[in-house]
Image (cartoon, rainbow, N blue to C red):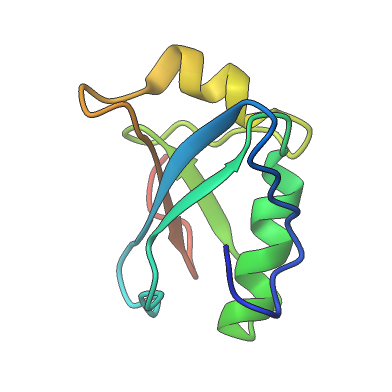
Length: 100
């Protein structure tokens, strides 16, 4: 989240994870969808950024096909379990509940 309004710190000297943020349903898509973030970044920080970037107060975030990670879960933990063959972590977000 390399824009000037990003709340998520990025440091090239620490371990990073490539995250692809994909919109679901009627949620607006971000102009930039791929981000290189610190592996210690947690889901709460991602949600906070998305809410601010999309100007919404409620957001649903998913990993995989319906797994909703807890706010304190780190990107490293999710990446280790759910990375794709292209070494990315795909997180989907929507304005309403999409799975379950």
